[in-house]
Image 1 (cartoon, rainbow, N blue to C red):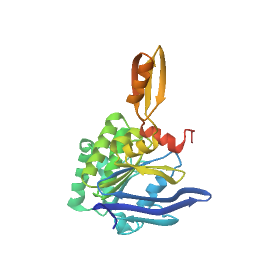
Image 2: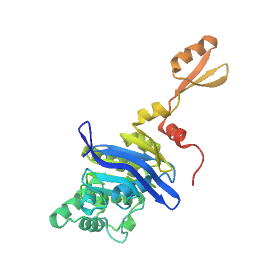
Image 3: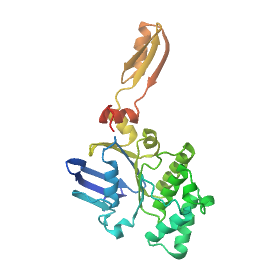
Length: 290
């Protein structure tokens, strides 16, 4: 079992590689996810994020390398896979069933029965704020409600590791906020969470560390502030003087502002700090990908 300063590495991917024909989906990727940590996976379309989640969940086996859940073994083993929960990007719900019936079905798949099943279903519905809609068919749910029920199905059995693949796609702001609160509550319980997203603000808000992938390779992995310092570029001082605006890239905006003020009368100024989006574009490029 791997540890970081006494913290358990709940998930370890070591030198994993996955190839489809001539396409290398994941290329020698090594990542460890700690208990009580949210690790974000960012990358353009085709970067390998979903393939990585599928290998972490045991849906796919790597062609090379190893995937281990808390030192127990590969998640392709059902006994090991029972330690993790998955909320896939494609909703895994039966719309003709009610919310409660969906969770009872998935609970039985997890091996839950009787009073334990009933308690966990009630707890999961309450956790995602759907207790009052438990007897309504899922086809009557809004997109945000379906996403929340999808999350409930993934955490119903109280897993130690939770894999969330684009969990807020197509949801309204209120549902997105509710999902955020759910995810942070799971983190507070000590769960290890892998979170894939295209939304930079989500990664900045939720993730303890962020891994940026492109073409199956790991380009960078660190906290958001550390990534910004390393790859975000210099702050930009914006100065208005003599009825014109000037943008100055500088490591010391205040000193640069003082130098400008000596030469001319400054009427307005501001500073643009680098963002995670800037880091992402600097590492992966700015051209469109479909």
